[in-house]
Length: 426
Image (cartoon, rainbow, N blue to C red; front, side, top):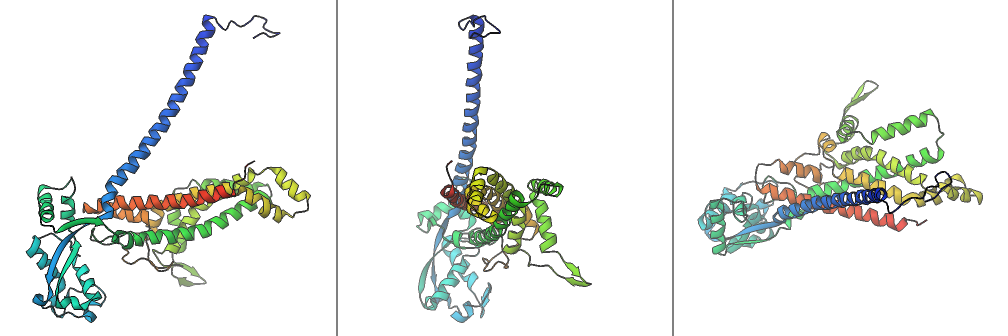
């Protein structure tokens, strides 16, 4: 290449130039190889996570049941429907111990430890549904014990495998989909636990979080970006918002504990907590405070990306400042706003530390019916199950993780659909 300053022509075929070109091409190939390796490594980790969760969690959605025949006339249980409809797990009804009768029949037919400790509740429910069962022989399929479940897996002991094989040989054991896992709540018996209570708690908590964080965060971003004067106070607010976005989540748990569940006084009068402990309302408020800075920052960046010509054109045809913002700027910035909301909601869905501090780690037997009822969420439920001693909870923990991932993908999929629907190509 010739120039006025250096009239010497470049020798592209010279040894020095060819060496430089080879080094340049080699550097480019190395960069592409490193990038490809990073992508493959990330995909491998993701595949390993999904395969591991699917392999461990598949058994969590299944349940083995043991066949049990009961001759109720021979047992002569003095039990009627009115007694069985009483609340609680009363084991002795008019002197008849239904649990002992079921366990005794199971021991006589299959040996000790064949059915779970709470399997008798299935028999009680059957009698409550049809009291005429007490006047005939009946065959039940009851949940197998954790030992029998372990015998069906590769990690079971020799005794557990022998007991499971004996039941299979007698045609008294079958395995099928456990619908109760999706419709039940927490339990101390791993064969009876369900995910619906925690899933419903997560749904209610995320609804409160979204209804508070999204409008407040977007309106805050609108004011700071479109209306607030540029001075030291707004600079201080911007710095504070950026710092809050990086604050550890457990700090927000302490904030929620102090503000929503702490006692306070006014004019010498002492008042109790504003809201009940371990409620979805408190969890939603705490998580809303946590993700609000993320939504504010993302919303401001999205509104900054809207071309100034859009604002000038709207003002030029007589639109007011409010019309410019809500009819033009926000609709065009909505995809970016929804992206920030996706990130914030995904972070809130997987949080555990702030919810532990506000009491959402309680043992919840019944799913919450309202926003102030005691509740827990999926991440906390997974945390509690992972700390259980029983091996059967390992599969339930993996199954709960799968449910959490499906919930997260569904929530993000809806947000991505809305983002793409409102996206404008420039």
